[in-house]
Image: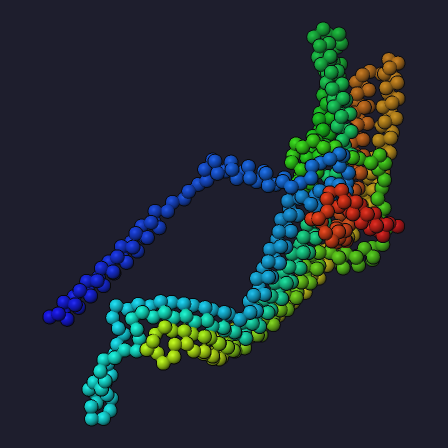
Length: 511
């Protein structure tokens, strides 16, 4: 009777525990179902925008004085956000390499625990043979206390995992080098864009002021003509033709202003200067034509050796070769070695602490079936890498030739536009003298001045295109003119270093 009562009491306790567990699971399920999308609030969006605006332009040297070409390049190298993103990606690759090195170490696991039972863990024994077969041979006994504390520390090392981790670490090391070449490719493109944007901004800085003056003169003449129309001082056809010519000149001037107005903003963006910041662009007085020797064989060889895209393909080929080795190693059996130390507080044990060691071999037999196919796929990937590298090499050679052809065409176009500018400026000076003497109309002078302005703008833009074509030649060759350290240099020091590097390289490619 007493035993039955105890049994019922134990059953009630177990039922109560199960009920509590079910209620807890139900509460967690209801809570999970109550989750709804929570859009960002206006305050959170404004706070994020303020943080981003502050972070985009913080820790930057202020723009001090006129910005020349190499100062613009230096600021782009230090502060351009696209370049900083590539730097962070390179740092991330290095961090991943550091993490992959730990895969080569054995596994070291430590654990500790506590176990409690309401009753002793006891057992009876039944004789299996002899005269007392099927009868209890020993009294109820236990070899385990109610409260037990355990602890162990175990070192395991799988030789197969070590080999695979070694190849993965080498692949990650090559990924770091791929990220470095990507960084080089990005910075070369940024420097090319800075060169183009700088010459567009520098070549048109003074022209914008002159166009404003000429535009005001044309608009003033148009307003006076409209007033004269009301007084009918001239025949209507003559007046309307005159006004149309003036409006056509005004339209041309506005088109030129629209073309040139954004050049400075584009340069500021590349330098990571906040749009709207006031700064001057220092343009040299003499616009010299950069010279590049037409030695295509030498240019092709330089490009094939230095282009970041080809170096990336070299590293990717090494990664594919390591993938083949990983495939072969993955088909081998794995040897697992184990060494551990254990502790158990159970006083009924003969020994409370002991050392243990073991070794085992395991193998996934299905790898024997899939391994050859995986190996053939890895070898095919190597062949694809080889052909892709050759295709990239062909594209690189084509880019070198196209870049030089554009350079030659841009050089001739600039020479023609410069001669046309000289003729138009002489004609404008002559028309100014004729208009002062009263022998030509104001409309004729405005038309001549507008044509001269168009020629000057085209000449400056042609020179910017010439500089852009020259920059494309340098980019197609993959020349890296960056100093080894950038972060520790200020803008002026970095600008001087870039200027010296460019001067040295330009001497090498000059005829």
